[in-house]
Picture 1 (cartoon, helix red, strand yellow):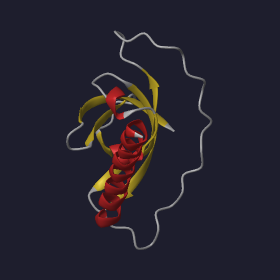
Picture 2 (cartoon, rainbow, N blue to C red):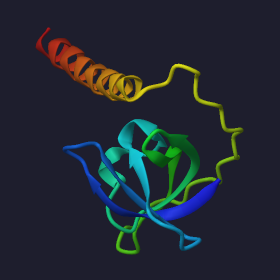
Picture 3 (tube, helix red, strand yellow):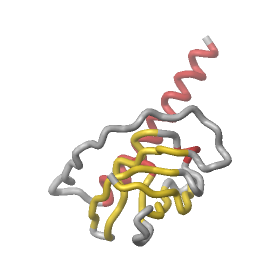
Picture 4 (cartoon, rainbow, N blue to C red):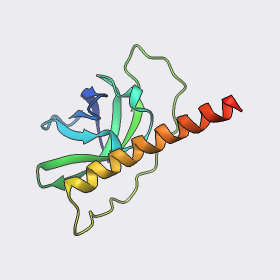
Amino acid sequence: MSTGSIAWFRENKGYGFIHPDDGTDDIFFHAAELVEGEESQLVEGTQVAYSTSSSHRGPKAVKVRIVGAPSEWVEDPQEPVAEEAEAPEPEGWSWQDEISAVVDKHVQAMTDEIKQLIAGWQ
């Protein structure tokens, strides 16, 4: 896994860029690839670990994990995360699949919130 820090992230768009610790070019990532942590933690300077994958637009970060907050945050330390083997992308992968995954994630979050509201009314 590679490490870096959030260069910028647009929560309303669901994507941003990571500045790798090794000094290479910034790498694109989408919030759908966040496997550990909350989108609200994706602020400039947040330390992340990630794997890379290729897409038809170039490299992108996948399996993004938040490993450290910016210096102004004070949180409980997280336990180290074991490195996972990187799964190859399916043969028929496309950006439509990527968009569908993001939409599914947000629809599920909204559904959960609606269920909580309904439970509170009863």
